[in-house]
Length: 253
Image 1 (cartoon, rainbow, N blue to C red):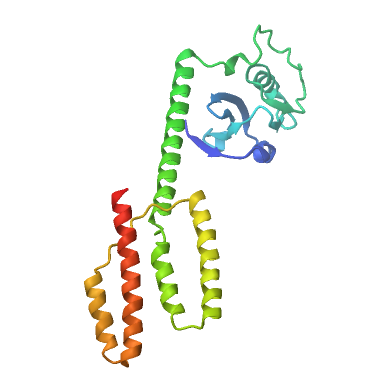
Image 2 (image 1 turned 180 degrees about the vertical axis):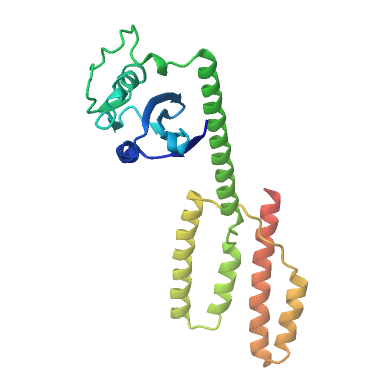
């Protein structure tokens, strides 16, 4: 016997039934299968002798309890027992059954008995749920670690070094202007330190080879007038002393 299978949507059920009816196919069955995510419906029709009596099966997957499906009794009255069974035993909402028993086709003690799972099925489903939960927890942990790593990668600011830089710049300014620049720096520093208290950055500050830096500054000063060179070197030495002092303090903590 030739058989074929085709997946269709709920909205295609009537169109398929009408097409098979027009082709003079015989209605065979509506088969219900209790699946993990709803009921699978299989509508089967058998073609004519001229076609070699093929059986064409149309599958509707994952029909939820609240989903309404149309009755095919408009085209095949013989489908009414199958559709009443689908309702009584599987809880499928079938609309417009030509002969509708309204839940009384089968006299059963349990509502939708064919949807009740066995202990083995329950254990298997619980295992799948636990594995999914463990996977989600692992992914969440990895995401949190990645975010923490990104936060740690952001270098913190050594404010003593920054103060030394600003003081060096202020050495070339008049007293009034220098006072304003330093006041602006102190305000900026306090604001930044307050933000770091909420979300501190822990990345280590790369060490600086101060002897190499001193040599670079001396080389530049050779091209400057003596008084200008003296100011530049003084600013560098202040910067180096502040930075080295801060590094030593951190190393002792």
